Image (cartoon, rainbow, N blue to C red; front, side):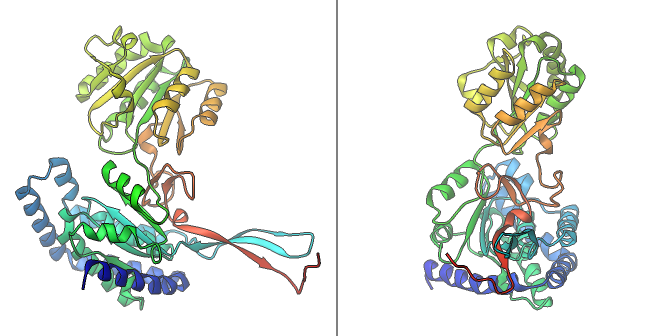
Length: 419
């Protein structure tokens, strides 16, 4: 069979399976998720052996160390994956929930019901845990899914797919509810992007080049974000100690995450008291500062920033720093250079914080808290499939509810309409 026919057949099977999983009750889905977790625990040796093959290939092919780090699957990683599956199982089921039922003047009742999206295609890189995370969330939300992991994790993903299949069968569900593309041929991605007849939504997780390609070529809606150019703005009357802690944690808690701060904006009145203290903490953490001319008055060891630094997602120990005249200039800077992902203000001024959260057009706007909290788990979603900076159909961390849509439900007692 050709790649095209293989992928079309996969899409057809997913469409049939999507109708079955959409009608499955909560207990059936819970049974499947628990069985997947059990299968992963009993297949620990196989999972570790498969991951070893991927790591050996990665070393042989000269894969960059950060990617190898994401690829590693050890005993702790397996336990975390199992815990993640069980966490999803414990979440409330959004499917079938009817809300906002209201009586209309005609006597009918109108409300909305949460329903699955249908078939979700997910394309991702490196991390094998995404395979089971994505499968669990899709399953719980009543969706079928087609998963395409990175070629560097092919053995790990195939082994995890076997555990998922075992769990689905034990629950009496068709294995086609979760299908993992088993080829490293990139042509499979191209075919998936054209399958709008069978795939309702695509979610890419990975580097900017992958997301740009999916956004440009997909024939179905895409849930995604391109960049995480996040900001922390230290306002005029901010508590200095709080501001330093937030600014440092927003960068250093984890570097290679999309919610790490990349640009620090500081009100001119705060520069002399805040910047030297923050710089000392960044120096201890090994963070390189790239600062504007006014900032360098207080940061003599900083590198001179270029215009490019304001629009760069470093994903590493580099931070751009700029002194601004105040709140209005900070908001203007974020509007010009931000990626509508996550932005924070540190301030004790209620009026300024309200203006910031109103005027900054990002999927997450924070007040007096580290940007690293912009995460589905921290938001109480239990888990997330990614972050969306789009405005339709979901924005911010995408959890279970974000993997459903709504349809209108109308109830009556024999009413007929007469115009």
